Length: 250
Ligand code: NAP
Image 1 (cartoon, protein in one colour):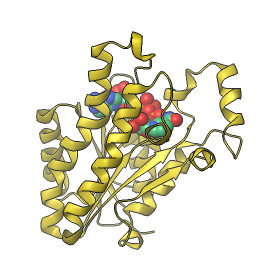
Image 2: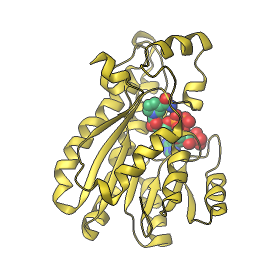
Image 3: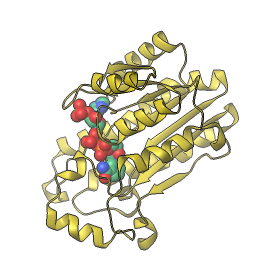
């Protein structure tokens, strides 16, 4: 897989799955724009890791749920590299609570960061991709957006929204050389899932056919494939990276 000459924006890539995706795309040769909101870890640390590999990267701190921040993110990408070929909509948050206890604020926050951001970022790059007749848009949905999960109505709605968005935009831009796909991870070992109680983790492992949580690397490999030349005829797809979880329910 060769992504040399490609320029990728990976949102929320200061840690977790996004970091693994940024490292993988850089390893495959792409110049990577490492975006993060900077709440937990600044994106510069990932840029350092990429540069230590002898590859190219810049950090852009931006809130992807804000239209003006997204415009700045894309402007900085174009200023640094003159083009954008790959967008990975990875940034996400969860605010879990049973519906009757879920606040409007927690609903709005998750819908803004997990779904509105996908609309804003995709809209901001798609014209550039269509002009160059080459583009890859890959968004992080979730197994929860397919089968639901109690305590995650906001997150499930946002992740299901990504699936509808992906299929709609895939049809809009297919004739312009731009593919649009989503990944639906199951439970992946990151800070987002590390907060789960040990007892709950043990229970979850029982319903994962392969019996283990996935790693950020598992997701990154799938993203790199969808970003590649070789995946040119794949669009409008939702690829599960979930150790068989969705297959065992649907
Ligand atoms: P994570 O460890 O919590 O990392 C999330 C990243 O998103 C962080 O770098 C965070 O920045 C960034 N971020 C949050 N709000 C942002 C904003 N408004 N603008 C820009 N960046 C923002 O999450 P993860 O587990 O790696 O998950 C990555 C993606 O995969 C998410 O979309 C998640 O929903 C999805 N997913 C994860 C799992 C799983 O099991 N882990 C399963 C299915 C789907 P800070 O570090 O500054 O806070």
